[in-house]
Amino acid sequence: MTRKCSYNHPLDTYLDYNSKLHSLILILYRNYVVQFVFELRFPWATMDILDQLEGNFGDLSMQKYSSNVVEKCLKYAGEEQCTRIIRELISNAHLDQLMQDPYGNYVIQAALHQSKVIRSTNNFLFQGIFSSSLI
Image 1: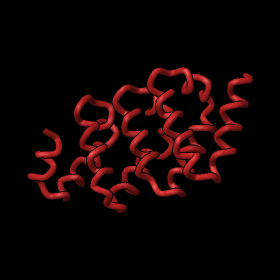
Image 2: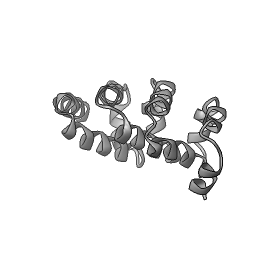
Image 3: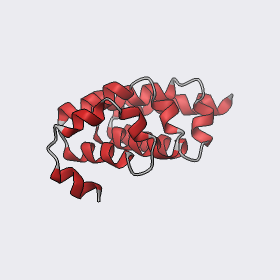
């Protein structure tokens, strides 16, 4: 349903959703709109979403619907942006809770997967997880 609706409206409609991004990603079905924008692979739209969510990835990772969006952020972000997201997750004061959270756990797994692709973040991520698990 989301895909059909998205194709029936011009991409400019995204700009209307853009101002309400945080509320969109927290609600069942509406978060699919944001996920679909990632799948369109328009760099400007991806960057816009990532910029708006920056600083909130930890909190968003522990919520049912927005955690799916964070996983898509990790998947579709470029190497530099993905590294920033991973660093934000690892430097989160509540990393131990994030790893044990039913939704956050999946985000950390996605970050681990992406860190294998981006070798520069791999050691940083493992060090953060290891030190957090010792606390």
